[in-house]
Image (cartoon, rainbow, N blue to C red; front, side, top):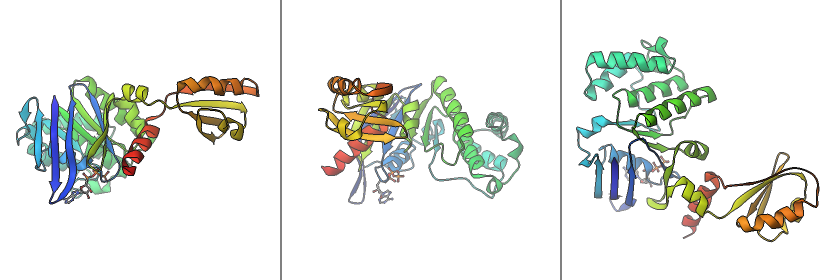
Length: 299
Ligand code: ATP
């Protein structure tokens, strides 16, 4: 288990991360979210031992993260961190041996992963000659080459087409099912919803929301009603409990204060014509994120 306990980081006088605590268990994908500058990269660097904490403790399987423990961690950084003049194989040998693998282990594992990512033919090509998506595949392979127990993924899908996003999703789920720990960070809330049962949102280094996605959604009272039919936006807006109405294509999305107000909207809708759809939905993580982050900026 990874345990981050009351961790604080100052850069000089600047407080970048404040009293951060969370745990990631084997087989869990944990979402660490925040706007730009919230403190995510700082946190990842402290976990991977690249940066000293000011206060607090971080342990992996109950041991502080020292040089040896970093061999158990894989880190896919948001920015490219490949030696682009090297070939894929040279990069793997360099990186894998740094992580304590033998030459043979690197070669066997590299072939397996290149095949899994459908890029075996690029093994002896210089990285700078590869497309952006294929470079992202190589970067992902480097993060998992040494079979880490803890994998940190920062915007893993950047530069990928939809087919390759699906491939990456499959590999990430395989990793989870093998009982590894994964920290997942992305600005794409739909991807976070897809993977993460537990998450944490940072704003200016402070935790503004933490817990299981299901509980977070249950506690967030607002709901959306999706309607297709002959309804009018101004009439919907007059109904008690309706906060906002948007039209997306042919669909109206009616945002209500809480579940109890569904009836009011339903009473109006049933008197209208050509109603094809009336569905009550949970809020999206995107809506919750925008509201929570917005509230904490107002404080
Ligand atoms: P992004 O989503 O943009 O990558 P982030 O959540 O990863 O953002 P961090 O890179 O951790 O954010 O930065 C957190 C805060 O710490 C920012 O205000 C940043 O300017 C500041 N910061 C980061 N590194 C340093 C440093 N070496 N010295 C001083 N301040 C720093």
